[in-house]
Structures are given as C-alpha cells and as structure tokens.
Image (tube, rainbow, N blue to C red):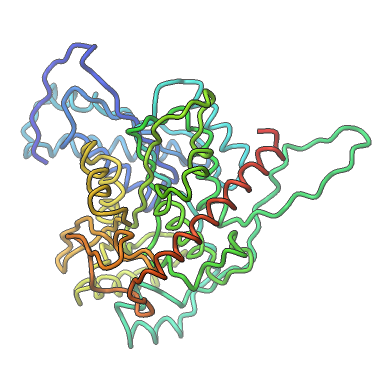
Length: 436
C-alpha cells in the first residue's frame, strides 16, 4: 500500500468517519473490517479518523476480533510505502483508526434495542452501516447431488447451489421481556423466523432505532447473495417459516427492500422507517445492496476435508471464467467497502444517472477483484428495461432468468411495495408488543 505520512492537523480540522459492521468475528464481516481499515488509510484525507464499530454476539468473540483487527492494522502499517514508514510515522497512521467492539444478538430484539440505545446515548453520527450478520439455516449438504451438479455443471452449481439441506421451520426464541401482572393472561407470542430475524428483520429494526444518528449522506449497506432468486421467495411466507431455502428467501427479500427504497410507491414506508423524533421532513440516507460473490467461509459448516474440496471447486469455477468467484473473503468484501467508502458524490450520482443497482464482488481468472452491477430478476441491472450500464456483468447469469420487460419490472415494484408494507406493519407490531 502506497501512502504519504500524515501531517499534523489542528484539532478543528480533524473529523471522524464512523462505520458499524455487524457479524464481524469471522468470514465476510471480519474481511469487511480489514478492508475498511486498508482502504480508509489509502483513500481518505489525512485529517480524517476511522471509528470502526464491529459487532459480535459475546465478549469473548469481541476480544478475539479486536486482537486480530489490531494485528491486521499493524501489519498494514508495516507494509505501507514498501515498509519505509518510520515507527513515528506508523504511529501517526495508527492513530487514524479507532477499533471498538459492541455486542448484539440479531435474533433477540431486546439486545438490538440495547445496542441502539447505547449508540444513541453517545450522540454523534453514523456515516455508514454494513448489515452483514446472518444465519444460513442449513443442516447439511446432499453430497451425492452436490457432486453430480459440480461435475456436470460446475459454474452454475457453485454460483446457484441447490444441494444444501435446509432446516425448515427454524423459529427464533421468545422475544418477551418476561413477567406479567398478577391475574393477567399471557398472550401467545407470534413466531419469528430465525433466519428472517437474523438476516433481515433484526437489521431492519436496528435501522429504525438508529435513525437519529443518520444524516442524508449516511449509507445503509445491506449484504445480499448471488442466490437471491425468485423461486425461493413467497410473500405469503415472508419470514421463510415454510421455505426450503430460508437463507435465499431472506436475501431476495433484501433485494426487494433496497432496490425499491427510492420509488414513489414506497416512500411513505421508507420515511416511517427512518423517521426521527423531531418528526420533521428531511432528506433520507440511501440504502445500497451488495453481494460478495461466492466466497469460502465457515457458514457452510464443513469439516476441514470437505472444506478443502469446496474451495477447490470454487477456484476451478473462477479458472473456468466465472465472474462471481472471489473465493477469498477479503476479495469478496470489495463491493460492501466500495458502497461504504466511495467518495460522497460517486455512488449517488451513478445510481441517479444510470439507475439503482445491486453491486457485486466480481473477479477475473487471476483473482483481480472489482465491483460490478448484478442482474436481479424483475429489476434487471438498474431498474430500467433494456438498459445495461457499463460495468455490468452479463455472463454467469442464472439459467432460469427471463429477459426484463415492462410487465416484469412493474411486478417487481408492486411486490416491493407489498414487502415494505408488511415489514413496516411487523415493525410496529413488535415495537408495541415489547413496549420498545
């Protein structure tokens, strides 16, 4: 990394860029944190400080993540400018990054509210949030089916896998605060899908509760997937309680939420979600949706032997020219970090001029990662029929796709509006139920 040693700056010139990343103890979340540190030091003004807030579920994981992130920071500083920085210069660079862990369990609404209250109590602002934490909802792998698909249809099988065994009907634990008044009947608590809560609804609630810390320039970055496909999502089962692919369902839901978030038809719901206590109309922060491509992480729950063969299959897919196989989580983190750190006018202008898109982590045969627009069934590359902006990936697409037409685009917007209505209704129901 080539950088110039920072000059001394007067306190009034210093500013802080604050980012919150959920699910940061391993895999993609940890890689996002590492890449945020590196790219911030490389691209941001020398007078600016990064306050990196990362979330884990318990104190032990938080301490371990802190140790590893500080170790990464020191490694980055040692390698800066070809290792020519003096200890004093490296120390000044190190002072530009503040790393802090916070605790939250995205399957428990009370802990989500506690985190929001903690951050609200500090004041300040959130310049970007990256909603990464989540659950897979799988209980195993159909190895026979997987082997056949990989041997006969390698790239498609590893990009849009259909051989994971789902754990259907996973339900989150009770959200009740506990205790009722004497003689008061206890109302049965409605079910919340565990994968839905961890991947989407928990972040949705956190977005609402953190709204006072957002500014019009803040960025809300959601993590989706290449496998967020139409067959996996049913609006009548939005929580995926009966789905055979609850993870994929939650990611398709994420696409609906973000890609329709700036349409006139959803504006009332989006404004309700991001309302502040003042109640005064104000410009809203923007939401962006990204995906890391296909990367090797522990989310599949494989042992070391099967993990080796999984990685081998992913690398072979890349070498056979798949655009969506970064494999390395650090490479897969490029799209989320781009959406969080790109210059203030760059991303909003791109989406204003070319249309709102899903930003993916693509790669070349030799692993040269880049950010690319991804086709979404019913939305296309930018929400405009017939338009394919520069930088869109038009290879490696889902085989069941249909060419975007006016009817499909209108249907996507209608379903997106229904998703927003249902999510807002669910948010208000649970806030009332828990008195939050």
